[in-house]
Structure formats: C-alpha cells, structure tokens
Image 1 (cartoon, helix red, strand yellow):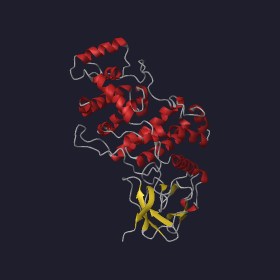
Image 2 (tube, rainbow over the protein chains, first blue to last red):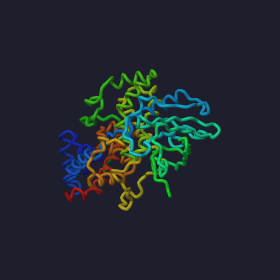
Image 3 (cartoon, rainbow over the protein chains, first blue to last red):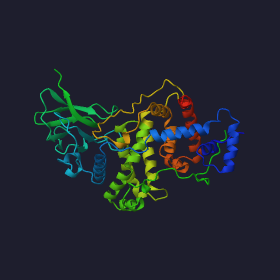
Image 4 (cartoon, rainbow over the protein chains, first blue to last red):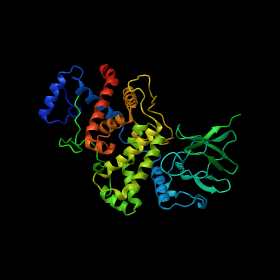
Length: 206
Length: 219
C-alpha cells in the first residue's frame, strides 16, 4: 500500500499527526526509491529558502509607487490625449543619484503599456505615463505635439554631450519592442515605440 | 498513488510557516484592514501605504516566476492596478495579503500563458534557459540588499530545475517553499482545490528530485 499524494506531501512537510506519520513512514520504507525523500526535501527546502528570495525591492522603488499613483489618477480622471499639456513630477519624487562622470544622467522613462498589458486600447501616437530622473539636478518635461501626434520629452540639466557621444535609447526588456528616437540641438527628444527605456550615452560612430 | 479530492477546507492544520508582513518589525502604521477600509472610501494615500508594504513580496513572487526585472515590474504594476479596481468588492474573507497574492498570481499566469512559456519536454535536459543570476534588464544604480545573495552553483542548479517546471508546478513549489504559504492559501491563490495543490506539489517535488538528485549525492 502506498501513501496518497496528500499524505506524502504532509509527511514531507512534517505536519502529519504522529500515528499517521508513522503509518506513512512505514509505507515509504517499503519503497526503495522513496526512503530518503524526507531527508532530501528537508535539504532542498532549506536551500530554496536560502537561495531564492521571497521578497525583492523593485528597481527604483519610489518611482514604482509614483507611477502607480499616476496610473490610478488617470483611471479616475481620463482625459483626451490632445488636451494633455506639459506635465512634471513634483520634486519630492526625485532622489539623489550619482551622475556618471562626463555623461548624461541615466533616466528611466516609463511608457504606457500600450498593447502590452491590461485592457487599455492602443492610443493614437505615444503616451508617456510618468518620468523619473534619479539625479535631482535633471528635470524631465513631457508635452504632446498634436501635429506630430507624438509625445515630446524635454530634458533640462543634462550635461552637454561631447561631440563624440550620442544619446542611446535601450529597451529595458529584451522582449520590448524596438524604439526609435532622435534628439535635436535644443535637447528635444522625440521617441516612437513602447517600452520602459534606459537613456544613456554611446560613443558616436566615426 | 491515490489522489482523493480534498474539500476546500482541511482539518489537519499546518503550523504557520509564512512570514506575515504585519508582524515584521519593519512594518509600521495601520493594520491592513483599516487601510483597506480607507481605500474603499477612495483614499489613495492609504493604498500607497499598502503598496509600499507589499510591493517587495508581490514583485519578488512575480520575478521568481518570469525571471525578468522589467516584466516583473510591469506585471507588479498591473497587479496593483487590478487590486485597486477590485477593492470595492473585497469582503475580507481572506487576508488582504492572500487576496493580493491571488491577483498577482493570475496576472502573471495569464501573461505567461500568452507568452507561451510552457516548458517543452519537461524531462528534456537539452531544454535549458540560460539564467545568469547577475543579469539585469534595467540599471539599478544602487546596490539592493535583496540582491546580495551568493551566486553559487547550487542556486543556479536549483533555479534551472525550477525553470523546467510548467507554470502550474512552478507556482505551487515557489508558493510553498519560497513564500511559505500553507496548502489552503496556495489553493486560494491559485484558484484550485487542495487536492489539486497536493497533486501539483507532489509532481513538482518529484521532478525537482530527479533533476537535482546528483547535486545532493555529490555533497
């Protein structure tokens, strides 16, 4: 007679009453392949708890909360895209962050989950949910250009780029769609695509 | 083996092994039920407190399933959005934490199903996912305390073995062994009976045993 899956699991976890545990142990003892199960899973369970964290702080945790608040606010106060003007994060949402020497501060830009997750319909043009600059000296302002049907991002406080560097736009996730972007001499950035982005610098190709 | 279906409630109680965030020394402020009432009255600052309290557990659970920081971020956001929308219907039949976990699990599971991350050939040793414990898809900029884990060969082997499980089996083994949930909580989170939880747990454990037996025999 063999232990049921229910009994076996509870026996492995040590939560059976004593008499039932003894009965299961006797059944397991008759199965050569299962005799070491309890010791094996005691070790595996301990190793899993020790090596796989149950809790992880999300990257840019304050931005996680602020973006969520923005999205909740948008849920309660939907307005047409064309009517959205410039929008800036309050300063209390910024954190001090070490600026890479000689380069623009890395900026995480959260874009709306167009077509990726959730039930939001694909909007015309791009839509930026919120922005976050880890460096307090850098500000990010977004406006919607109705003529171009695109969201424009203005970066202020970014160290002027050396001529041998260009801005790079990298999707935060390998699975994210590709992003095309350009920046003019005034620092106006036009992006197309949907993703969470990392904005940094790359050497200009010669 | 016999696999009798079990009722949703079970008289043989497990000793609690889950870490209750409410009892952690780091948790301060109002209790969850008080915050939930305030949220149901439209208090978004109360919800911000709940988000701060549980974002680590939600993000951690999702990350352990999808193994991508950016995707886990997005899915965690989606889970909290869905939870906010569903709060008016929350009746406290379970703890807020368990209820939130169920939403996060469903969001993740639906996403994985869409991404067709079902394991192919579960015992196929050639189907592997390259898992670099140090891989990041977004810059952190700041050292995270929860990332200061030893990148040992054992950890990599364990994670590789878990990645070979189907989402159903991966979910129950992580909820049990990593998150420390009880059987009835796992049943509630995954939306199945305790009997199904036991069946999946049995299968997942046996599979991990076959994949990792050599690791422990060599020690």
